[in-house]
Each structure stands twice: as structure tokens, then as C-alpha cells.
Amino acid sequence: QSQELSEAQIDYHAALQALVENGTRMVCTGRMHTDRICRFESLCYSTEAEEFIYFHSNSSVMLPNLGSRRFQPALLDLSSVEDHNTQYFNFVELPAAALKFMPKPVFVPDVALIANRFNPDNLMHVFHDDLLPIYYTMQQFSDLDLEARLFFMEGWSEGVHFDLYKLLSNKQPLLREELKTLGRLLCFTKSYVGLSKITTWYQYGFVQPQGPKANILVSGNEIRQFTKFMMQKLNISLEESSSEEYIVVFSRTINRLILNEAELILALAQEFQMKTISVSLEEHSFSDIVRLISNASMLVSMHGAQLVMSLFLPRGATVVELFPYAINPEHYTPYKTLATLPGMDLQYIAWQNTNREDTVTYPDRPWDQGGIAHLDKAEQERIIKSTEVPRHLCCRNPEWLFRAYQDTKVNIPSLIHVIRQTVKSKPGPKKQKWSGSLYPGKVRDAKCQASVQGTSEAKLAVSWQIPWNLRYLKNHTFSENIKPFTIYLVWIRCIFNKNLLGPFADVLLCRR
Ligand code: UDP
Image (cartoon, rainbow, N blue to C red; front, side, top):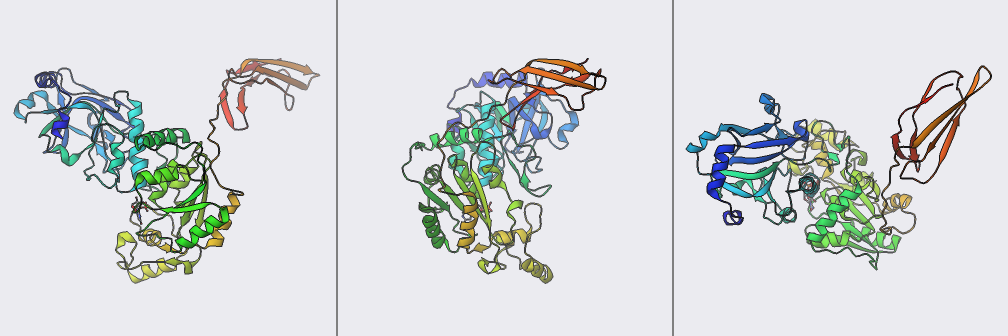
């Protein structure tokens, strides 16, 4: 790697002189640690102390200059998971003169994006917390292009999905452990620290039970721009006119199994008169799964991280999520939220096993696979008797884990019934037409004509020109409850297609 780093040649002497003379320069966006991303020149990192270093000199800059508020609780979140206390970023400060007594700096010539992956072994976390946020952080800052290099500081090894992270830039991402092999003191010529949270749609339940984020800011369009990029990098072409329609059953092979999978596949094929295929992360390459899902009419799967792959479904497809016994689908909605994002244009269906006889529990497994043998007898009995896991916080609730890792015999008639309530004829992707909705602008030339009839009756005739980006003309006369010789303030807004709310025009004064 050190060879790779030195690929882009830099004048070492000049770089060292710039560091000593200019020190570190930091300018950030964001008002709080939870929405902050910082751009640095000459940010350094001690691989021995495992600390970032800010060097003060005559030309150094630190904006925001928070003083000790920098530690309340941190300068910024290194991962896209909001305000998680294992993901905080900060630096220690030194005078640039201290460089005389420190190891010789090794300069990183590439523009760097420095961040934490949150849970690189879980596919949902990989896409939601890392890949999408990294992709859109890179879109936000123009020098984070394909020649930028990713630095993952969370301390994990590559993990099973590292190939996906590699698609985001042309340079090999570097892990915290690997930095040690580069030198004792690393200095990033230009770097960005932190990740944009603008694309995340789910909170995992660290402070309140899990659920959709309060203020979702992403739509299907941005999700699909990202998947288009990923598919190009994976060399998968979007087949426009796919001949055959089919259903994909995404199965798990280690736990949370569908016990009658063969029967399920047959039943789906028969009911919808479609080829039905089964895939799993264990038996198929990632590319093959993406290729299959990106042309599927329906994706059927147990609740679980593999369902994040519905990101790749075509518009109009249906997602069917199966929930084990005692797990309320309304309480675990990362994939429902994804499928129902505006503009995703997916149909979402949840099915829950409500028959105790159709579930297989594993009380004797280790706690992290849902075992409950370590709990006291009364608590074990309460859990076994319970018919629904009460809402809970992340991540070690034994009742939740016990129920989440059940295997399920899917009751076919009940599942088909639920699907049929939504999918009336054949499921399948709609023709991929642009389905963006346009918000109308302000109405123009608003006028008000007040007329008085007698002493107590009056009318306000309000007219306006349509917004600049629409085609129709409207006006309206208010007569109910309008009093004569009264001043009315009128705010007019265009509502297009019932739900596209435009802005209010400037206030209009009506008087007579
Ligand atoms: N996983 C899998 N097959 C299995 C069980 C798990 O591919 O039989 C994958 C799963 O998709 C996820 C990771 O292993 O990416 C961790 O699974 P876990 O059950 O811990 O998380 P969950 O799926 O409940 O989010």
C-alpha cells in the first residue's frame, strides 16, 4: 500500500515545509456535531497514539472554533448513525513546532474521505449506513471524485462485503490497521471527515424503539441513481425489455429459515403463473443476485438484512416481507420504509406467522442467536408464553432475539391471501417511465375585488394567474362569512394534483 500511496508524486520537502509553516486548516459545514462534515488541509494521524492531530501555526484555521465544546460530546459523527458514542471524531492539538520532535511525516497525496463503517458484516448496515452515505458525501464535494481514497477508521477488518466498498472509488480503501504499515505519523494533504446523513431513512433504536427517521430527505430517484452507479461498476446492464417475468425468493440458509421453501416456491409459481427462483448470499455471487433482482417482478424474503437488496428492484415490483411468530411487522420497518419512499414505486406487503405450531424456537442457542437459557426460569417462561415482543431498544433484547431467530413454516394459503389483497392480477415492473412529481410555483398577478351588497353582505373576488410552470387558470369568489368594510389578508397557493403543494404567493390585501 505504501507504494500505492506514493503513486501520485509529491514534493516531500515542500509538503513538509507547508505543514510546518501553515499548520492544519479546517473549515466545516453543519451547526451540530450530528450534521457536520469537515474539510482539512494537513490533518495528521499518529498511528501509535491512534489519534488525529491538528497542528497550530501562524496560518492555521479552525472553523467552527468551539473551544471545549468540541468535546461536548464531539466535533462530529464519523459514521452516518446519528450521535452514537462509539463513532465520535475529535483531534488533539499540538504546535507545529512539535513536529521537530516527532517521527518524519508520511504524506497522503490522494484526497481522502475519512469515516467509520457502522457494521460492515450486515448488508442492511453496509448499504444504509455506509455505501449510500459515502456515495452522496462524494457527490457533495467535487474533489471527492473517483480518484479520492476512502479511509475506514472504525477498526474492523475488511469484512465480507469489502468488494462493494471498493466500487466507490478507483483507489483501494485503507483500514485503520493498515495505516500502521504506512508510517508512524501520517499527514493527509487534503481530506474530508464525516459522512452525510441525508440519504438515511431508518434509526435502529438506540434511544427510542427503532423506526423510520423523523425527517426523511431521500427519494427513490436518488436511491436509483446510486444503484445505477453500482450496477455500472458491477458490469450489470439494465435489461430494458426483459422477456420473462419471474419471482425471486431470497432465502437465508443459516438461521431464520423458511422451513417449507420448496412448497412456497411451487405455490408462488402456480398462483402467479411465473417462474420462481431462490437465491441466497451463501450460494450466489453478489452480482448474480443484483442481476436477478433488478429484473424481478416480486421479491419474497424473511425479515432480515438481505431485504435491503430491494434497492435494486425495478419500479412497480412487489416486496413481500415474512415475519416470524410474535414479531409485529409494524415495529420493524427498515425495508417497508425503503420500499415506500416517495418515488421508489414499489408495492410492499408484510406477512406474519400467527400460528404457534408453525414456528420453531431455539432456546438453547447462544444468547446472540436468540438463546434464552441464560435467563432466570420465570423470565424464560414469560417469553415463551408471550404472543408479541413488546417494543424495545436496540440491540440485545433477549425476547426480540429469541423470536427473531425462529424458523418458520409459512402458511401458504394465508400468505397468498395477503399478497392477493394488494397484487390483483400479475405482479410486475411497470414500464420505466419518469414518475417525478413537480411542485407548482407561486401564483402570479393576484388581484382582489371586494364588493358590498347592503350593509351586512360582501364578496371577495380573488383572481390570479397560474404559476409560471403550469398551464391552467383559476379564480375563486369567497362569499361565506365575508363581512363588508373589513380588511382581508389573502394568501394564495397552488395545489396541483391534490397533493403537490406550492409556495404561498405574497400576501394580498382585500378591502372595501
Ligand atoms: N445472513 C445470511 N444468511 C443467513 C443469516 C444471515 O446471509 O442465514 C446475513 C444477513 O443477510 C446479514 C448478516 O448475515 O447480512 C447478519 O445477519 P443477522 O441475522 O445478524 O442480521 P439481520 O439479517 O437480522 O439484520
